[in-house]
Amino acid sequence: MSSLNLDDFTDLIERPDGGVRRDAEARRERRVVPPGSLGRLDDLGEWLAAAQGAVPVRPVERPRVVLFAGDHGVAGLGVSARPAGSAAELVREVLEGGRPVSVLARRLGVPLRVVDMSLDCEPGAFPEDVVRRRVRRGSGRIDVEDALTLEEAEAAFLAGVAVADEEADSGTDLVVLGDVSVGGTTVAGVLVAALCGTDASVVTGRGGEAIDDLAWMRKCAAIRDALRRARPVLGEQLRLLATVGGADLAAMTGFLLQCAVRKLPVVLDGVVAAACALVGQRIAFRAPDWWLAGQRSGEPGQAKALDRMALEPLLDQGVTVGEGAGALLALPLVQAAAALAAELPQKPDASAEGQEEEKLGLEKPEPEAAAGEPDPENPAAVGEQPEPGKAAQAEG
Image 1 (cartoon, rainbow, N blue to C red):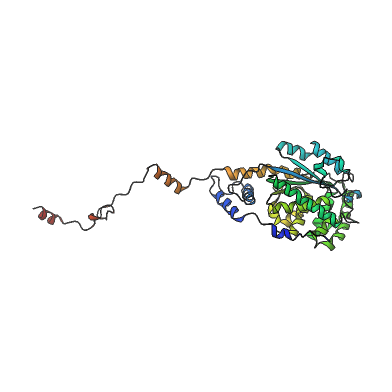
Image 2: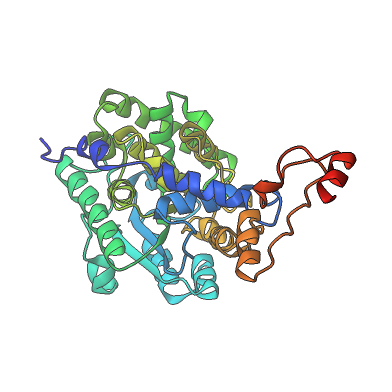
C-alpha cells in the first residue's frame, strides 16, 4: 500500500492569479495597437502574467528543457520502428548534440537536462547527474504484466517531484517537457484511451519514427490488451501508472503536478507528455492551468488528451520525433508574447495630459461672461443695470 497521498495536490495547486490577469487585460486595452490585433499572443502574454503574478509580465529568461528517459517492455512486441531497449542510444545522441532537440536547444541557448528513470542499460553508461534518479532497468510489458511495482511507481513519482523542486529552486522560469523513450507512445496510448474511455484504434498512432501497417496493428493489439488491465485500476492514479505506465511516465506526472504547486509554467511536447498531463488532471483538476501545449504532433492520442484538458496547441508543425523538439519550437513564441505585452507603449492618457499642461503653466483661458450674465469673479456686478434717464439724473 502506498503512503503517498495524491489528494494533497488538489489542495496545494492554485489557479494562476485571476486579478493579475484582469490587470494584464486592462493594460492590453491601453496599448497603441488595437486590441485583438496580435491574436493568440495577447492571450499568451496575459496567461504568462497571471502565472508569474506580475504586470507587466517579466521576460522568460531562464527556460530549460527537461527530458525523462526510459525503455518499455512492450517495445519487444515490434510496436516501434526502433529496437526494444535502444533508448540509451537516443539519450547518448541527445547529450552529444546530435538530435533535433539538441540542435534547437543549442541554437536558442536553452540548457537541456536528461533524467534517466528506466533505461535498459548499465547505470555507468551515463554521468551521475543523468542516472541518479533511476528507479529500475526497463519497465514491464504492460499487455501481460505490470510496468512497475507500486513502490517503484511511488519512487518514480517522487523523483519527478524532486526534479521539479530542483528546477524551481534554481530559478528556472519555464520548462519545456519531453521524453526520450522506445515504446513510450504505446504506453501513452493506453493511458489516454483508459482515461478518455475510448477504444485502442482511436488513440493508436505511428510513433516518432513512422511504423508500417503491420506494426501499427501489433501496436493497436498491445494497447487493446493493456486496456483490459488498466480499466480495473482507473480510480487509483498511482496504481494506474504502475500497471500500464512506466517509471518515466510516473516521474513526468509527478514533475507536472509539482511544477503547478511551485507555479512554474510548463510547455508540453508530444503524446507522452500529454498522457502524463491527463493523469495529472485526474489527480488535481486545476493543474492544467499551468501548462501549455507546444505543438500538434498529429498523434491521435495527443489530440484526444489535449481536447479533454481544453489545451489548444500553439503550433501545428506535425513534429513527431519527440524529445521535446516540437515544444521547444514554441518557446520563441512564448518569449515574443511576453516581450510584446511588456514593451509595447501605452496610449497617452487624457487626464495625464491635462496634469502635464498645468505643470507647464498652460492653463486654459476662461470664457468671458456674456452681457447681463453674472460674473463669478465680480459679484458686485450682479443685478439690474440702471436706465439711461436715471443715470443722467444721478450725474446732475
